Image 1 (tube, rainbow, N blue to C red):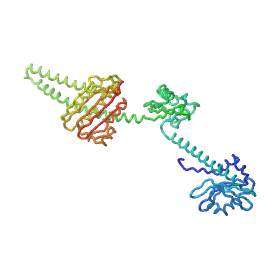
Image 2: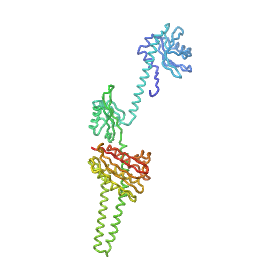
Image 3: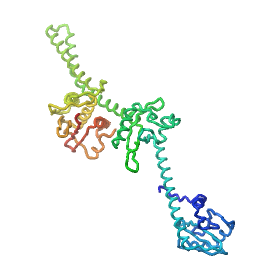
Image 4: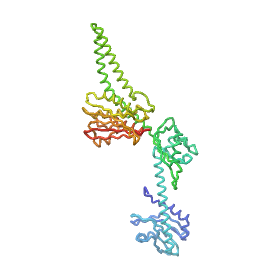
Length: 483
């Protein structure tokens, strides 16, 4: 029992004995339900007078004999008092007090055998009371937990009717209060058919199903819920329904979106830094050539050469900007397509090479010629690879090597992408926390780069494995399952 509940409500206890005929079988004239403290304090919780002898006789007996009643150690004892026979039958005992029945009959003593079965009845009756109390308390506990959570909790029968639910469903949609039978439509799902198919899958296959993002209408708002569907079984282990637990993830998705945007801004800022460095040189050449072209004494052939240099430098700037614009965080391309991961890796390699600035870093590419087609969003892959490459770049202080590899692991039917560096590496405690938002080992870092990388990997059910050794470097491996 979660909380102690002795449940000795006198009237209820006495009433149960009357209903069962227990008192009639003993032919009682009077009885009392007594609490007797170790300090000799007496409390008569209730009495029943069957022959009109009154309570005064019983109360006097208790007051006079309370010391004897406390000293007796057996479950039941018989006392003779003024022509009446009193029998004490134990109910329960604590360190502070004892509770017992006091039975009374006139001119007719109690036999041991009838008191034995009477005591047995009392013990079993009391056990039943405790069991019922425990059941009631458990039900109340479950009900309170059931209704206190903000998550939706629903139980569907095999016909997909809602047989029970918690208060959160009522908060979601007040219309259900007017319906006799609650159906799937009560939840106001945007894609009800997909949810129904998932429920039937649980019923038919006896397996759990998770739905990551389900749109639910709440009033005029649309909320996003994640649902976990589990089989509900009867005592014979037969699936007779489905338990659905839905958690509102709207705020979580908004937070994730904000973190992703912050990560994008940081990534764009770092890319822009390399871009400005690359554009600065051709712009300086253009300015110098334009200054010379404007001089009156310059020869025609020199003017043609200078104009040609200006055109070449403009083409060079255009090429840099085109490469920059191919990064899909800027573009709005979001459809899933079959991607050439090697091509994306090369594009990211070109972008990352601009971030070297004054560092002596060699960037090596070791890409397997053929990789199976992979379906995904180009922007996701670019962001995933660039975040890891930029981390590798920043971990190298002055000079080092970054190696980008791609492999097809035929035996596992996986594509492996690895990005390794010869930077300063990480301690175990740093490695354990890496990928947590705002946790960073860099003075000006945000901790959002690897957080976003991990989020994208989870989106594609890819495994992201990071190994690091202090002063030797870090290797990040991403394992994509092939189609």
